[in-house]
Length: 102
Image (cartoon, rainbow, N blue to C red; front, side, top):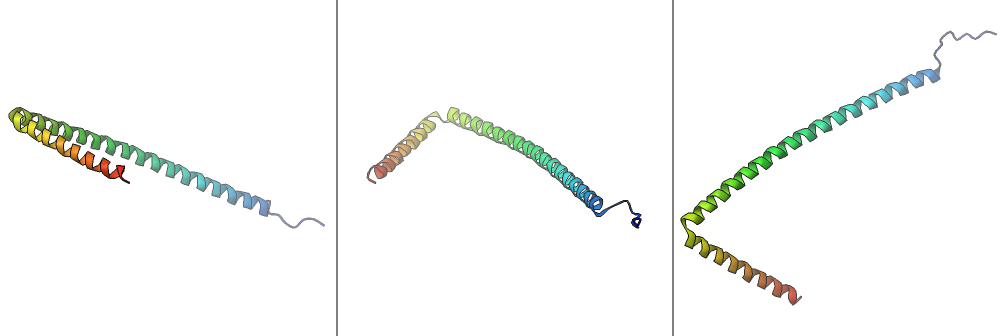
């Protein structure tokens, strides 16, 4: 008896073709996800860099304003610094006493 099946593809070869297509789809999806993650990381770096520049500029501006105030009002500045130091010392003393009695 001769085989009557004239189709060269067998169920096994059709299964292999399906697996290959699935693998290719997975690889494409992973490549797209990786590209998206790289783009998001690049955008995040740029946003962080711009934000850091703005913070530095604001800090420089505030420092300049404080320096100008100290030059214009040296006695007031000295009294405010002394008052702030005394307040911090009193607060630190109060906190240390509470922790010492625990």
